[in-house]
Image (cartoon, rainbow, N blue to C red):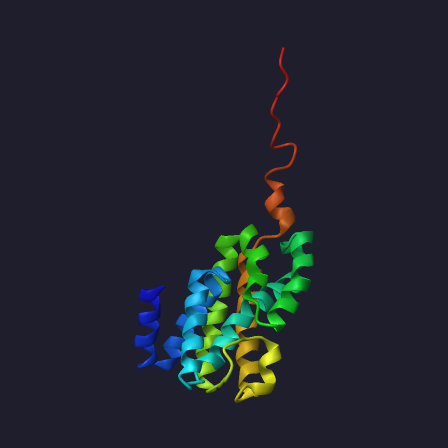
Length: 196
């Protein structure tokens, strides 16, 4: 975590768009885990130092993964289990209050398709967030932060891009549930377990 924080600090002195993308990659990787916490801790440090330009894009990257997963589940029901479709409802609520962990049920079931989708989507949102110069005086995220954000319209546009990219990639990468189950129907598993 110390090493990643130093990388973030170095990027902070250079290209801000790259910093936003890196923040998104971290936030969209482990949903509240150590990588996500590096991005969040860096946001807390910058806000404590009176710099609000990092926490604005961070609000996008922390909010996008659960909302993107939920949107994908709502739009492409055949690609998600009943449990995932139910989890999408709570993911919306969690995304609105900046809890990235709302994406965990989706990633746990299909990490190789979900995690790249959330990482790319959050990275896109973080990069665009820097272009819009979103500021945030509070190191937190979610739609509940709109009243305190500088450039809330830019936040909503960046979030829409992040959520759209996440959902679009998930829908593109995931297979229909029935298609995945087709290779494991009873005809394919004709194994004689009887003992004579």
